[in-house]
Structures are given as structure tokens and as C-alpha cells.
Length: 269
Image (tube, rainbow, N blue to C red; front, side, top):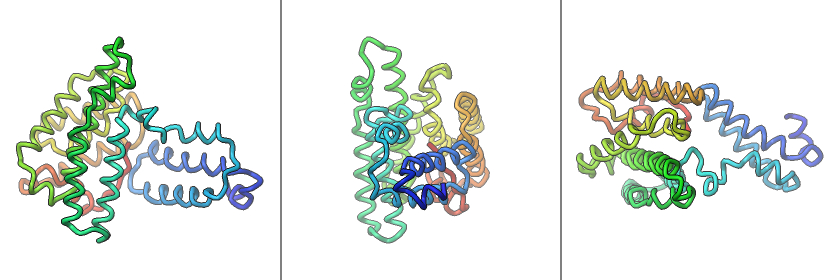
């Protein structure tokens, strides 16, 4: 790697691109816990070094970054517009924390993002990628995509205290119940079951009873057994931290701020 950085023209940028992928995936495999930020910052710097150079093999490049082509691949059976909404939510959170946008401007943008997520036609997205004749695959894609959409709606509300205080409690409860009822029928032998880790985690942040928390733990452990990425075990640990530190006055919709207050960082797909 050092040799490649010193001689990028002769060795090629493919090594750097592969290293970027390695930095991110190794963190996800290991745990995604606490140290992910330096790894992503390092990956970003490597990509910036590579930008002026376009002389690397396009086939290898496309293979390495295939997951970036979400429109075709629908990464983790997540509708690409949902990924866009999540990205914009994260950017807005950062801008608000840095004072780049006012609280009122952020509230308007969070509201718009929530509206986009609520209006997303997941069934049409599923039909566009799965033949109508394959009813089982269509059902699975639609249910998994819907779980991502519902989890994203909850995440947007959870990310914005101003939006949360203006949101009727029944709306939040309906989203939580819909997410649970969407996840529940998906069996562990379904090919898309492994893609439900993040929606299950989001549901877990709202779980307040021993029964619902046990269901979340069991499900995340089943996902981890099928797809043993370290970040899933970190998600389990993070939920236990949240539940342990939750008080009656906290409510169940402020986990984003709670983790920041506890200085807990972890990366999850």
C-alpha cells in the first residue's frame, strides 16, 4: 500500500480502491464499534488522492464498487430512494449540528424527507425488479423493502427532536406496529431475512417490554447466525446499552441523542 501511494501512476489506483473497500468491510466484519470513523475518514482521503487518476481498469473498478450501483443491485433489498433519504438525513443531521442550517430550516427538511419516505411506492419498486410470476420473491422483496421504508420513517422522526415533538404519538405508534407486523412473517429461511438487521435494530430502539426486547434479541441473533457480520453483534450490545440507560421520562424515540450523550459510536448496514 505505501508503495502504491508513492507510485500511483505506475502501480495504478486499483490498489487504493480495493483498500478503501477493505477498510470499510473489515470494520463491519470485526464489529463496527467505535473505531469506524477513522477507517471511513482514511477511506475518504484515499479516494481523494485517487480522483485525478482515471487510468485503472474499469472492469475491476466496477466489480469492487458494485454495491454503489444501488438502482440495479438494490443493496440489502433496500429501495434506492430509501438509501438516498437516509443519506440526506445523515447530511442534514451533520449540517444542523454544525450550525450550517437553522433549527427551523432543518425541521422543514426533516419533514420533507419523512413525507418522501411515507409516499414511496415499495410495491411498484418490487414489481420493477421481480417478475410478477414469482409471487414468493415479489412478496419477500416487497416486505423487506417496506421494512426499510418504515424503519427510515422512524429514524427520521428519532433524529429530529423538533419533528418528534410535533408528531402525534399515534403516528409513531402506528409506524412501530407496522414495522413489527412487516418483519414478523418473514421466515429465517427467506433469502432476504439477512437484510432485516437494520429495520430490526430500529424496532428494537422502540421496544419497551421484556417480550418485545426478547423478540428483537432473538431475531438479531438469527440474522447474525446467517450473516455473521460483527456489526450485528455491536447492534445487540448497543440496544442493551440503550435499554439499560432508558428511564421512564426518556420515552422511546430519542435513541440517536442518547447514543451521542453516551459517546457510543457504531457502524451498521
